[in-house]
Length: 371
Image (cartoon, rainbow, N blue to C red; front, top):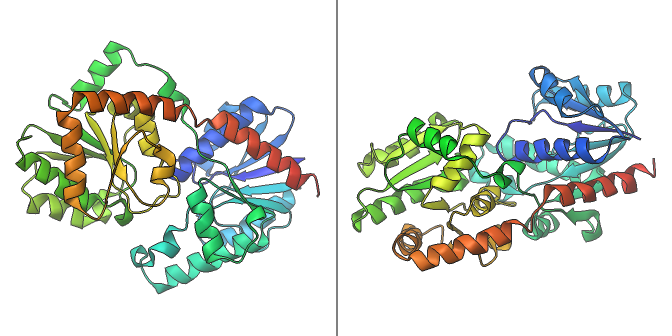
């Protein structure tokens, strides 16, 4: 069987993490299958280094473009692919083989106001509908996302399989004291700080996070800082406006992209990790923080309670006061911090990329075996 995987979003935040770990585990678990990895030309070396069973095929068609609708089927035909895995929701209409699609969430349907225009909404709905209808199996990452898919689309529940995300290997390694000191010095981390990591899109609710941070500082935590990790801050000027409104110019820092190894150390250094998202298909950053031994504050909506279980403080993400109260509790209650840190480590161990990709491989066999 020859399996193709679309890896053009290899370096994205959420989907990129999924794709990278899928490829790493396939390289480790299955040397017998020929995997064809469709990737950007600049990612060929990265793919080649993962394993001999992964063969990089450059593809320059941008994701979510008209070009991918005809370019990808041509490649799949040329490479004589048995099964194609689209690890995000775009499955070209002319896909010439059996297919598996991963739909991480229904964010575009749940929050259409965050899309640039009505055409973008129509595109998202059409492409999702096509993926649901034309794929042989649908993978998703949480029971919450499965319920959303079944609510928006008339599809059999048996066609949709929940396979949760896992924890990156880098969180299993304890950094040395020198590595921690270098990160602390590089980012000048001399005060206690809250941490957010993820993308900067509107549904991540960062304006309310900044407002909650302002409330916490007003309650006497005037040495506290807020670090926000995520790309493309310039696309969302309201974040800067919110910082200026609360006069937090030197207390809120936007770090942009941070390499994986440094991110793992920043999780460990943070006093509290705060993730007040309005909607998540899974919500990996809180789990990564928990795996790092850092107490977590996150939202009581969508999949987040399902992911964190009883190992985090849940808040109303629409209420900055609720977010601020939870942060204050963790900053003032050492016993609660220690309890959540311990619960978080246990909870994080329940999520494994090795187990998840083993199940994905089984589905490849179930679907591709009928070709």
